[in-house]
Length: 354
Image (tube, rainbow, N blue to C red; front, side, top):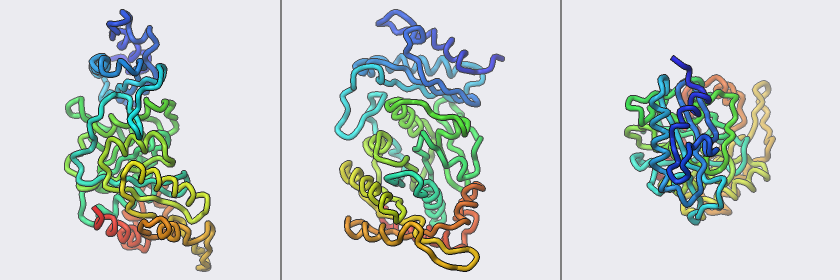
């Protein structure tokens, strides 16, 4: 049995003919961004934006042909219009497929955990909040929407696991610590960069959300990438978000970017559940001395100034780092500890809002 690789995928896609141009999509240079890992295949088909709806059958044919290859478990093919003139975007964002159907409609409530900048502990906060909501008796899913820097497989100790598909259409999420989890990190080696461009990313993001058999969930936590770019706008446009949680450190530069995130969600009519101040203080593990390395209280002051709730603060704690690196988030590894109690107190406030 021939191993599935980029060459095999390309040779298979030579059978897909663009009827209007009378040639196959490979020789036309329409195929890009091929990723193959453990039977999971993803690629993009670059088109003129005006042909998006007309070429949907071609996309499906390409997907079906590749899926028929021995050893292929799942296929994600997206249409992208990067090479053509700019498509006519909706007011707050765009998507590659031309579809406007809402996503994740079967989920009880979808919560975005976001930050204005990276490095503030957003992903660690997202996974521990998801586990805290689980502890409150909810069925919880966790979607890692950071396609360029997926963290959740490592944080949950399931790096290297691969989604399966019973029907060849829907992927089953990975289960970890009582959560249902999906991430692009399950499809790629940990050190493999995603080198897709904007519309390719949006198309892959949509397919990761709609082609997963999530089952019945009360809540889904979406771990957003940092910033206010395409991913945030796509999710805000295509998913009915119950609200957003903003994570920031007390540092002025982090708070400036957090305010940008809050304003972005306001513009797309997503309620702000509140702000969490992470790395709020550091207590020396040897002498007990408390020090405000990044300042203190800035997030709470910003919350008051902006008229949003302050959900709580979390310290800069070595046990958080160790448990995250070990793949056992602190709410799972030390459920009776002070940090887990803080996360559950914040989760109680969020649960009351949804």
